[in-house]
Image (cartoon, one colour):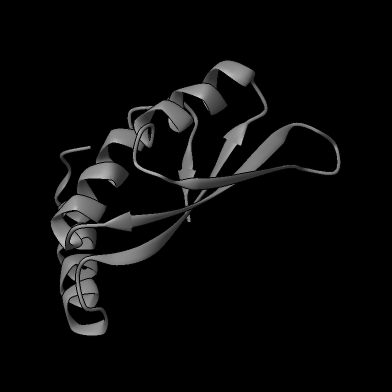
Length: 95
């Protein structure tokens, strides 16, 4: 994920987060992954031991699962770091 477009996206997000929140702050991540338990577990492990509240919901046909993860983050950098970690999971879509 080193294409310039994604770095531009992260830079915009960094500025937005810095402007709109006082840190540390709770942040809500939303992801969609193919409904494979291993992928869901992989994402859950990225947020392990952080006190995250993770909700999962399967799509109506069961092909995809959405994950909503509410977690207290230290700063905008920390938020972006987690997005980059999750981006390594094959087939994940960040919302």
